[in-house]
Length: 119
Image 1 (cartoon, rainbow, N blue to C red):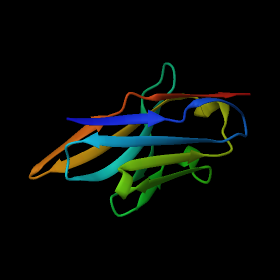
Image 2 (tube, rainbow, N blue to C red):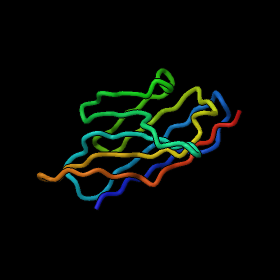
Image 3 (spheres, one colour):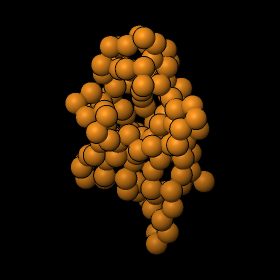
Image 4 (tube, rainbow, N blue to C red):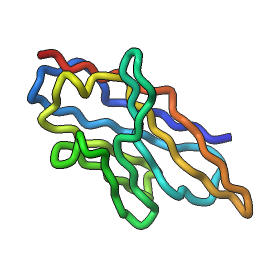
């Protein structure tokens, strides 16, 4: 069993910052990629940022230059530093990761954390 627990969401004014964290726990040997997704009301869930086990990152164009994804492999934790927040960044942010144990690979979602940016 694996669990992903997000934290750090909240209400912030436009232009403000938040830092999201996601901690993985359970039985696994390693974590491959770790992602942050978000879902705004009425819209599909979208990939916001991705980081590989080697630290290679990718971002959706709308957050480039404002968000930074990072991970601490020793703590099985991924972070999302969000600066210059805009109302359109509002949504539920989910952690998504790929795990490995022996020859088995699987993916799991966290429960999500709400981010609300007021104008």
